[in-house]
Length: 137
Image (cartoon, rainbow, N blue to C red; front, side):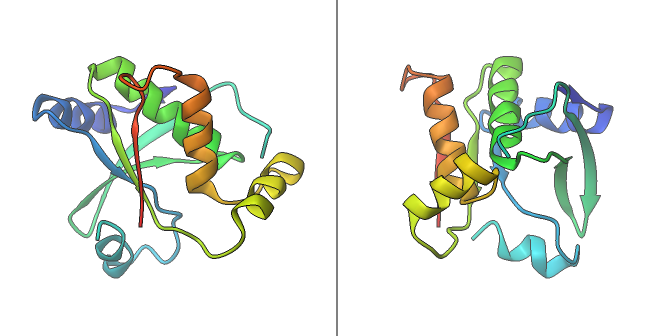
């Protein structure tokens, strides 16, 4: 995991304030409404690069991966270890059967990102006192 200078600065500032809050968002149009709306593959890469970008007044940690749940989980665990602060991550709930989504992830590397990310985090950190906060709306 490598954070660029901007991402590192933003994470450090947020951790100093006592909280890390991240909103998981798949880049779509990139317009202001996309970011304003979000706050209310089994194959995994060896190194992930995180870039800090600012768009429409929102600070964005941009991360690209072919396994989104694994990449988000890896970033959150890295931020926790880097700052000593347990991050909060916020997802939108997608429609569909959770078991079907999990099966799609296991067999095809695609599926419900929120629940799969939470399960990856639960397995990676068995201690609930150190586990990260996952919120789904």
